[in-house]
Length: 112
Image (cartoon, rainbow, N blue to C red; front, top):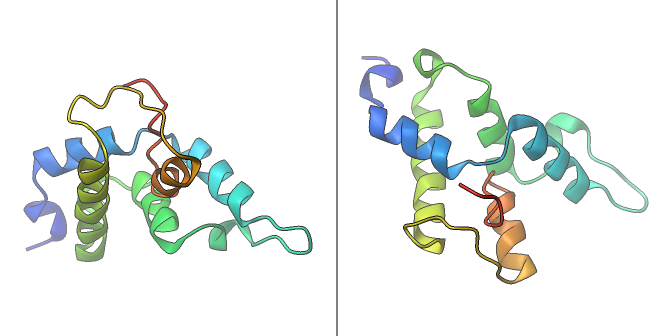
């Protein structure tokens, strides 16, 4: 049974609601956070591993997902769920908190 057979429509929808940054926004964010005065990561290595995995998943169709993709999707949904109110209204918080969520594709200041 393929991973796409086991992924529920609910997880697919929850992931795409939790990851409210576009692929372009996430790529730019990961590239910006990986840039330092003396070095800059290659685009495919920029940012935290989970953020790069989210970026890969956003570029896939549901039928192309792997078991690892599904695990990443569940983990990202769990993190966003645990750190956000259920209504997902834009919320200001500390910079570290916001940046941590943005590293996985969720901007808490972005309207739903």
